[in-house]
Image (cartoon, rainbow, N blue to C red):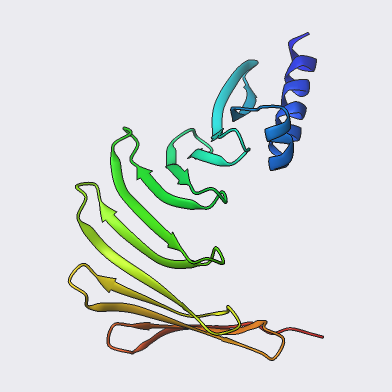
Length: 186
């Protein structure tokens, strides 16, 4: 009798996790926990895979992820602006203590303008500025240390259709670290 219930539970959990933000809001879902259930030597073993908490608009405001063995992988919480975009992201360790906090500022078009990463103690660790061209395309990301020293520069290029064609990452000394090309077939 427990086996059909187990399959029903797994089916419903899979269906719920596949639900849209609209459905989460419509059914006033507060949170979702996904469990992996295995039968080992005739015994049921439950391992939490993930957990998400939602606000009244269906936005994720807290997320936890675990490994296949149930070990801690990630714990984040989010404060959102009126458009549902994260303005504060907090990363926690396994014990629930704050590891870091990121504050994000957006422009009037809801594009990221700046992100500041803070330590658990509230000190600025780094600041990233996002630069856009007149078409609204992100052309660069400049990341600075707390002291204002350039740490990393990412440059983006686009084709005539506005499709990203390349991403180049440089260190603070302007040395190329990596390059990624985007090849489209039209």
